[in-house]
Image: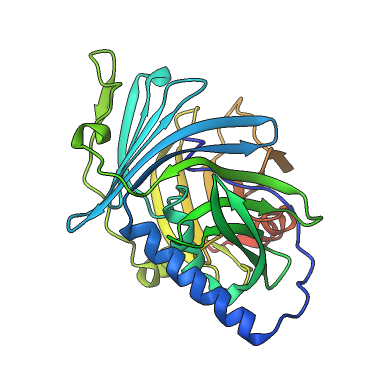
Length: 328
């Protein structure tokens, strides 16, 4: 679902100006508090998501208690869609496709609950500094500037509630400083009790099909790499394989392998599909909005790299992939 799970586009960011160490320490403390607030506070609100000309308004209910987190997102414009999350189990409801998918997400990108946690785990590869003070959704906010340490990943500007430390606004920033993607709360209430029925889908009906499956266990990347014939020779510093699956099906009926690599915040997927007759495929680079992709052909397979990283990153990864025949 695009308003919850989305991939990005861009090139590199210019290096940040030097800031006093005290400011950096305070910024890291704010990031830690933002991470904690995202998973411990109960709130409801409405936020807008914008990418290019695409604008969506989304209502969010988020509850945190001894059982963990429960969250429901509802699209308020365009096609009716919902996402319901219980801890790390996600249900995506899309009546346009008459289908509901339930799965565990290795790389969920929800706003505002997921981004703080991903940032906190990726700080070795990003500089975190304090920015300006502002007001978002009628609340006082302090800006955090997240700048990558190299040209192979994106940066962020975040606005954090100075009272609750909830994330109120997020901007994904491209190489030239252009904003590629924005999340912004227009209203939010943290002094609230949310009844149980607010977390139940209002879209369930006979016309819809629910697909429920047990979540997959995390892959053993060490043992998997020993038998994995397709390998990228280059990845940005800090990227490692975090997910693998072969259950996908291409339009032509062929199996598709997917490998996901991440530094904790940014991620790329490598898709590998055997070539079949009369099947077109991406050759070279492409982008749609904030999405970057690079496709090539090798060993009678289509190889495609798609990710929330700059265009040069997916191309460099794609050109480094090779096939090693394990029978040799």
